[in-house]
Length: 230
Ligand code: NDP
Image 1 (cartoon, rainbow, N blue to C red):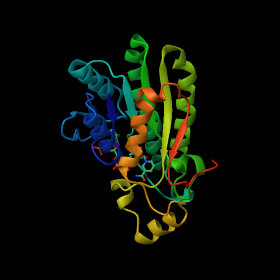
Image 2 (cartoon, rainbow, N blue to C red):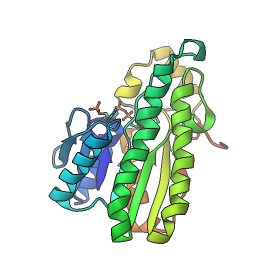
Image 3 (cartoon, protein in one colour):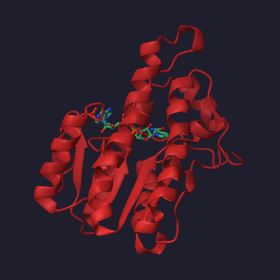
Image 4 (cartoon, rainbow, N blue to C red):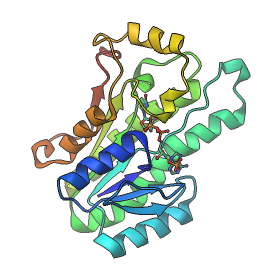
Protein backbone atom coordinates (compact mmCIF):
# COMPACT_ATOMS: atom_id res chain seq x y z
CA UNK A 1 0.00 0.00 0.00
CA UNK A 2 1.04 3.62 -0.44
CA UNK A 3 0.31 6.71 1.61
CA UNK A 4 0.80 9.88 -0.40
CA UNK A 5 1.71 12.67 2.01
CA UNK A 6 2.61 10.39 4.91
CA UNK A 7 5.58 12.07 6.56
CA UNK A 8 3.57 13.55 9.44
CA UNK A 9 0.10 13.92 10.91
CA UNK A 10 -2.78 11.80 9.68
CA UNK A 11 -0.80 10.23 6.82
CA UNK A 12 2.03 9.11 9.11
CA UNK A 13 -0.48 7.52 11.48
CA UNK A 14 -2.19 5.73 8.57
CA UNK A 15 1.22 4.40 7.50
CA UNK A 16 2.02 3.24 11.05
CA UNK A 17 -1.30 1.40 11.44
CA UNK A 18 -0.94 -0.45 8.12
CA UNK A 19 2.69 -1.34 8.94
CA UNK A 20 1.58 -2.62 12.36
CA UNK A 21 -0.85 -5.05 10.72
CA UNK A 22 2.02 -6.42 8.60
CA UNK A 23 1.44 -4.65 5.26
CA UNK A 24 4.22 -3.38 3.02
CA UNK A 25 3.87 0.38 3.34
CA UNK A 26 5.35 3.04 1.04
CA UNK A 27 5.20 6.66 2.11
CA UNK A 28 5.72 9.69 -0.10
CA UNK A 29 6.07 13.36 0.78
CA UNK A 30 8.10 16.33 -0.38
CA UNK A 31 10.61 15.80 2.42
CA UNK A 32 10.86 12.03 1.92
CA UNK A 33 10.55 11.50 5.69
CA UNK A 34 8.64 8.37 6.64
CA UNK A 35 7.68 6.50 9.82
CA UNK A 36 9.96 3.67 10.92
CA UNK A 37 9.34 0.38 9.15
CA UNK A 38 7.96 2.02 6.00
CA UNK A 39 9.57 2.70 2.61
CA UNK A 40 9.98 6.47 2.19
CA UNK A 41 10.23 8.19 -1.19
CA UNK A 42 10.52 11.95 -1.79
CA UNK A 43 7.84 13.09 -4.23
CA UNK A 44 5.88 16.29 -4.74
CA UNK A 45 2.29 15.62 -5.85
CA UNK A 46 2.32 18.73 -8.01
CA UNK A 47 4.89 17.09 -10.31
CA UNK A 48 3.73 14.22 -12.57
CA UNK A 49 7.27 13.10 -13.37
CA UNK A 50 8.21 12.81 -9.69
CA UNK A 51 5.03 10.79 -9.12
CA UNK A 52 5.91 8.38 -11.91
CA UNK A 53 9.43 7.94 -10.50
CA UNK A 54 8.08 7.37 -7.00
CA UNK A 55 5.65 4.71 -8.23
CA UNK A 56 8.47 2.98 -10.14
CA UNK A 57 10.61 2.91 -6.99
CA UNK A 58 7.73 1.56 -4.92
CA UNK A 59 6.74 -1.05 -7.51
CA UNK A 60 10.33 -2.27 -7.63
CA UNK A 61 10.50 -2.41 -3.85
CA UNK A 62 7.15 -4.01 -2.99
CA UNK A 63 5.15 -4.64 -6.18
CA UNK A 64 2.11 -2.79 -7.55
CA UNK A 65 0.13 -0.54 -5.23
CA UNK A 66 -3.12 -2.24 -4.18
CA UNK A 67 -4.20 0.38 -1.65
CA UNK A 68 -3.69 4.07 -2.38
CA UNK A 69 -4.29 6.66 0.34
CA UNK A 70 -4.24 10.14 -1.18
CA UNK A 71 -3.61 12.28 1.88
CA UNK A 72 -1.29 15.12 0.77
CA UNK A 73 -2.94 18.41 1.61
CA UNK A 74 -2.17 22.05 2.35
CA UNK A 75 -4.11 25.10 3.47
CA UNK A 76 -3.74 28.78 2.54
CA UNK A 77 -6.56 30.26 4.58
CA UNK A 78 -7.73 33.80 4.00
CA UNK A 79 -10.94 35.65 3.18
CA UNK A 80 -12.05 35.75 -0.46
CA UNK A 81 -11.18 39.40 -1.08
CA UNK A 82 -7.63 38.79 0.12
CA UNK A 83 -7.27 35.38 -1.54
CA UNK A 84 -4.81 35.64 -4.43
CA UNK A 85 -5.19 33.50 -7.48
CA UNK A 86 -2.00 31.73 -6.38
CA UNK A 87 -3.55 31.00 -2.95
CA UNK A 88 -6.45 29.38 -4.74
CA UNK A 89 -4.68 27.47 -7.49
CA UNK A 90 -1.82 26.16 -5.30
CA UNK A 91 -4.28 24.57 -2.87
CA UNK A 92 -6.25 23.06 -5.75
CA UNK A 93 -3.04 21.85 -7.40
CA UNK A 94 -1.89 19.95 -4.31
CA UNK A 95 -5.18 18.77 -2.80
CA UNK A 96 -7.26 17.97 -5.89
CA UNK A 97 -5.03 17.81 -8.96
CA UNK A 98 -2.42 15.97 -6.85
CA UNK A 99 -5.04 13.33 -6.04
CA UNK A 100 -5.91 13.02 -9.74
CA UNK A 101 -2.21 12.58 -10.60
CA UNK A 102 -1.58 9.80 -8.07
CA UNK A 103 -4.92 8.04 -8.68
CA UNK A 104 -4.28 7.98 -12.42
CA UNK A 105 -0.82 6.48 -11.94
CA UNK A 106 -2.05 3.96 -9.35
CA UNK A 107 -4.98 2.88 -11.52
CA UNK A 108 -2.59 1.35 -14.07
CA UNK A 109 -1.44 -1.39 -11.70
CA UNK A 110 -4.89 -1.80 -10.14
CA UNK A 111 -6.53 -2.28 -13.54
CA UNK A 112 -3.95 -4.92 -14.41
CA UNK A 113 -4.57 -6.73 -11.09
CA UNK A 114 -8.33 -6.15 -11.34
CA UNK A 115 -8.40 -5.08 -7.73
CA UNK A 116 -7.57 -2.01 -5.72
CA UNK A 117 -8.64 0.46 -3.08
CA UNK A 118 -8.45 4.20 -3.49
CA UNK A 119 -9.04 6.27 -0.37
CA UNK A 120 -9.04 10.04 -0.60
CA UNK A 121 -8.68 12.21 2.50
CA UNK A 122 -11.32 14.92 2.15
CA UNK A 123 -12.61 17.14 4.93
CA UNK A 124 -15.76 18.08 6.81
CA UNK A 125 -15.07 21.56 5.43
CA UNK A 126 -15.47 20.24 1.90
CA UNK A 127 -19.06 19.33 2.76
CA UNK A 128 -20.15 22.18 5.03
CA UNK A 129 -17.89 25.01 3.78
CA UNK A 130 -15.90 27.36 6.03
CA UNK A 131 -15.28 31.11 6.01
CA UNK A 132 -11.67 31.78 5.09
CA UNK A 133 -11.23 28.39 3.44
CA UNK A 134 -12.92 28.77 0.03
CA UNK A 135 -9.87 27.35 -1.75
CA UNK A 136 -9.45 24.42 0.63
CA UNK A 137 -13.19 23.61 0.77
CA UNK A 138 -13.41 23.69 -3.04
CA UNK A 139 -10.47 21.28 -3.29
CA UNK A 140 -12.02 18.87 -0.79
CA UNK A 141 -15.51 19.08 -2.33
CA UNK A 142 -13.86 18.37 -5.67
CA UNK A 143 -12.44 15.15 -4.26
CA UNK A 144 -15.96 13.86 -3.65
CA UNK A 145 -17.00 14.20 -7.30
CA UNK A 146 -13.66 12.83 -8.37
CA UNK A 147 -13.81 9.76 -6.10
CA UNK A 148 -17.42 9.03 -7.03
CA UNK A 149 -16.61 9.23 -10.73
CA UNK A 150 -13.79 6.74 -10.24
CA UNK A 151 -16.15 4.50 -8.27
CA UNK A 152 -18.40 4.34 -11.33
CA UNK A 153 -15.57 4.09 -13.83
CA UNK A 154 -13.47 1.45 -12.07
CA UNK A 155 -16.02 -0.53 -10.06
CA UNK A 156 -16.40 -3.26 -12.67
CA UNK A 157 -12.64 -3.90 -12.34
CA UNK A 158 -12.82 -4.59 -8.63
CA UNK A 159 -11.52 -1.18 -7.61
CA UNK A 160 -13.28 0.82 -4.89
CA UNK A 161 -12.97 4.57 -4.42
CA UNK A 162 -14.02 6.33 -1.23
CA UNK A 163 -13.49 9.56 0.68
CA UNK A 164 -12.78 9.86 4.40
CA UNK A 165 -13.86 13.30 5.64
CA UNK A 166 -12.18 14.20 8.95
CA UNK A 167 -13.15 17.08 11.16
CA UNK A 168 -10.54 19.10 13.03
CA UNK A 169 -7.66 16.75 13.89
CA UNK A 170 -4.60 17.26 16.11
CA UNK A 171 -1.70 17.70 13.62
CA UNK A 172 0.79 20.31 12.37
CA UNK A 173 -1.94 21.65 10.07
CA UNK A 174 -4.10 22.68 13.02
CA UNK A 175 -1.28 23.54 15.47
CA UNK A 176 -1.27 27.04 13.97
CA UNK A 177 -4.81 27.80 15.18
CA UNK A 178 -5.16 30.25 18.07
CA UNK A 179 -6.65 28.91 21.30
CA UNK A 180 -9.74 31.09 20.72
CA UNK A 181 -10.30 29.72 17.21
CA UNK A 182 -9.80 26.17 18.44
CA UNK A 183 -12.32 26.66 21.26
CA UNK A 184 -14.79 28.18 18.80
CA UNK A 185 -14.51 25.14 16.51
CA UNK A 186 -14.77 22.66 19.37
CA UNK A 187 -17.99 24.36 20.55
CA UNK A 188 -19.58 23.28 17.25
CA UNK A 189 -18.52 19.63 17.55
CA UNK A 190 -21.22 17.40 19.11
CA UNK A 191 -18.52 15.18 20.63
CA UNK A 192 -16.89 18.27 22.14
CA UNK A 193 -13.27 17.63 21.16
CA UNK A 194 -10.99 17.43 18.18
CA UNK A 195 -9.95 14.13 16.58
CA UNK A 196 -6.78 12.14 17.09
CA UNK A 197 -4.97 11.02 13.90
CA UNK A 198 -5.45 7.40 14.99
CA UNK A 199 -9.24 7.83 14.74
CA UNK A 200 -8.95 8.85 11.09
CA UNK A 201 -6.40 6.13 10.33
CA UNK A 202 -8.59 3.32 11.67
CA UNK A 203 -11.39 4.33 9.30
CA UNK A 204 -8.94 4.33 6.39
CA UNK A 205 -7.81 0.87 7.46
CA UNK A 206 -11.43 -0.33 7.54
CA UNK A 207 -12.07 0.95 3.99
CA UNK A 208 -9.01 -0.95 2.79
CA UNK A 209 -10.06 -4.18 4.53
CA UNK A 210 -12.06 -7.14 3.19
CA UNK A 211 -14.92 -6.03 5.45
CA UNK A 212 -15.39 -2.94 3.24
CA UNK A 213 -15.35 -4.82 -0.08
CA UNK A 214 -18.87 -3.63 -0.99
CA UNK A 215 -18.36 0.03 -0.08
CA UNK A 216 -17.57 2.40 -2.94
CA UNK A 217 -18.40 6.02 -3.73
CA UNK A 218 -18.94 6.69 -0.03
CA UNK A 219 -17.98 9.76 1.93
CA UNK A 220 -17.27 8.59 5.46
CA UNK A 221 -17.25 11.39 8.03
CA UNK A 222 -14.92 11.06 11.03
CA UNK A 223 -15.72 14.43 12.48
CA UNK A 224 -17.38 14.10 15.88
CA UNK A 225 -20.67 14.97 14.16
CA UNK A 226 -19.66 18.48 13.11
CA UNK A 227 -20.77 18.18 9.47
CA UNK A 228 -23.69 15.78 9.90
CA UNK A 229 -26.49 16.31 7.44
CA UNK A 230 -24.17 17.54 4.70
P1 NDP B 1 -0.01 17.85 7.90
O1 NDP B 1 0.27 19.24 7.46
O2 NDP B 1 0.36 17.41 9.27
O3 NDP B 1 0.65 16.80 6.85
C1 NDP B 1 0.46 16.98 5.48
C2 NDP B 1 1.20 15.87 4.75
O4 NDP B 1 1.08 16.10 3.34
C3 NDP B 1 2.66 15.84 5.08
O5 NDP B 1 3.13 14.51 5.09
C4 NDP B 1 3.28 16.63 3.92
O6 NDP B 1 4.62 16.24 3.77
C5 NDP B 1 2.38 16.18 2.77
N1 NDP B 1 2.36 17.10 1.64
C6 NDP B 1 1.96 18.40 1.63
N2 NDP B 1 2.12 18.92 0.41
C7 NDP B 1 2.63 17.93 -0.37
C8 NDP B 1 3.03 17.86 -1.74
N3 NDP B 1 2.93 18.90 -2.56
N4 NDP B 1 3.49 16.67 -2.21
C9 NDP B 1 3.60 15.61 -1.38
N5 NDP B 1 3.26 15.62 -0.08
C10 NDP B 1 2.78 16.78 0.40
O7 NDP B 1 -1.54 17.65 7.62
P2 NDP B 1 -2.65 16.69 8.31
O8 NDP B 1 -2.05 15.42 8.72
O9 NDP B 1 -3.40 17.51 9.27
O10 NDP B 1 -3.62 16.47 7.05
C11 NDP B 1 -3.59 15.32 6.24
C12 NDP B 1 -4.77 15.37 5.30
O11 NDP B 1 -5.96 15.41 6.06
C13 NDP B 1 -4.79 16.61 4.41
O12 NDP B 1 -5.27 16.26 3.13
C14 NDP B 1 -5.75 17.51 5.13
O13 NDP B 1 -6.35 18.43 4.24
C15 NDP B 1 -6.74 16.51 5.67
N6 NDP B 1 -7.51 16.99 6.81
C16 NDP B 1 -6.88 17.44 7.95
C17 NDP B 1 -7.64 17.90 9.01
C18 NDP B 1 -7.02 18.42 10.26
O14 NDP B 1 -7.75 19.02 11.06
N7 NDP B 1 -5.74 18.22 10.50
C19 NDP B 1 -9.11 17.92 8.94
C20 NDP B 1 -9.66 17.43 7.71
C21 NDP B 1 -8.87 16.98 6.70
P3 NDP B 1 5.78 17.25 3.26
O15 NDP B 1 5.54 18.56 3.93
O16 NDP B 1 7.06 16.58 3.63
O17 NDP B 1 5.58 17.29 1.79
